[in-house]
Length: 69
Image 1 (cartoon, rainbow, N blue to C red):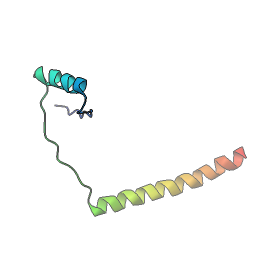
Image 2: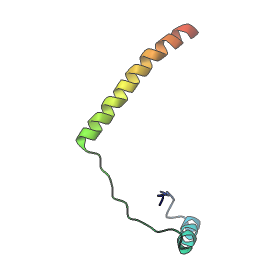
Image 3: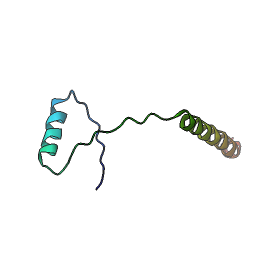
Image 4: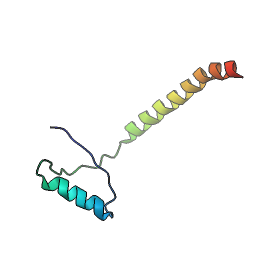
């Protein structure tokens, strides 16, 4: 079984009608999703990865920029 996540404007009548028609086919079921709040450790790890990426990209871009100038 596959999972598809849809995002739509629930104030749009057309979007609601299309969603109702899709659900009425019986081919799909709606499953409640739990909100996943990242832990402090996950936030810190993501921040460290982002900082490492940014630092690495600055170093690797400096050679390319120097060649172009």
